[in-house]
Length: 604
Image 1: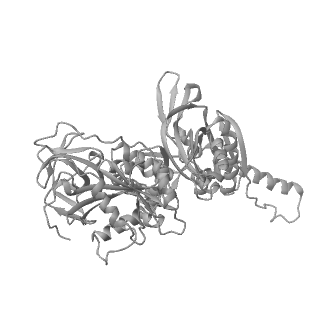
Image 2: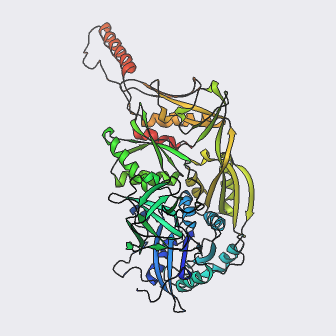
Image 3: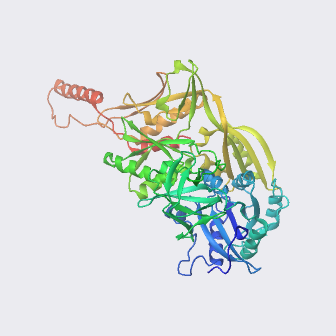
């Protein structure tokens, strides 16, 4: 499609699509791309913006995608739509928050059968915090179970959306898509800014390219940028020369310049990608802006886990893979560490358990590295008796007990939306996980919203699966960290054949320590292979053994070759075997299989 008129900021609309996971966000994006003729019939496929295999397999959006569309409205005018498709899972809400900062409005997609869910409310709050205009869209109205009237009432109960007009669409067959796009023109304001002011461009994402270095995704707030121009990143005052600017159609396409209100990308030989921070402001080096744009808070990992290659020679490949992945996903943190049991590896930080699982799968698939992942942990604040505060994310880092005054752990506010008949089971689970009840509110006669405060550590192991199992898949959850609270925490150390295995040790609340330790040593007994000697598996707290299991020795019949003869001859052979086993136990090394590290995830 070619432009028939000069495009000004009044004809630009920047908007995101936000929704709970699996409410049809990517399918709506597909229909918009088709209606605006951004893709040809030959390029047409499902979830066109989800170009990662993992995204297509799991049916979720992991990375945000920006695309520029030309739309001819019913009034005959031509408009530029900059559409950003965002992830729906709670672990990727950081992607949503930074992309909303590049927009003036958002389409809030709600499933006509499932209604308002936990992540829906979270996304609405983020959009309102960014002062965005929100257009509620009820999708999947073609389903036999759809109830648009009921869902409309739920949307109108959300604070801030009481008076917003609601649009009904079916992304599957295209019903209502054009009316929705007309609403984008009517209800989402055009960008404000001036081309005459010094350049201010917000970096809202970046990807790494082997040839061009870092490619940064930007939204121009003031001024313009073009190739050959000297630019400066305002956080570190580094100066670069722009080599290319462009837009996404959805493929990358070079343009002569980007000006006020436009969304696109630029390259400027950013060799050290850590210097192009998401949320930073780019300005003209010769005529810099006086202040930075309001960015967004730095992403801090909340879940930590160690990755070790199964084959030691893959260590450098793992380091290379983590470097490359962290350039595309700035929320990953990693540092080298070593373990006597597992060799050399990396301690990595993530935004949640799904985020951890996705990164592990990408490392194994894209870089063909077999990994052992240790138990996930959280970041603890350890207050020492000398008034110092130490941050640890690994049980092996915990100082001696006699040095510790108290320990704080991260606490979360958890929202669960569930049909009423499952509330009893969910509340029982939350009480068992040290949850503190805060509120129960019925959204309608069938569904209720539960609010609990509980330690983040308590949702690390199989919590999401348990919620889904109890509610038969109907409950949804969302959480955010609200701070740190003091807890009675202790370290439980695991010993295999008298040797402490750091990567099997864990930090637990003292009331649950014995039960978890008992289950873990029993699980380990089934996965550690039998040796020619007895292998004791023990759990201890402060040098006191609290649980033990024993892997029985393989028995070799040394009397098989002894036909007849004196009993003393047989006894001599048995004593020799006994002495050999004793020596073997002292110097023998027990290989710990990967299943041992997985067994700790199943102790609940």
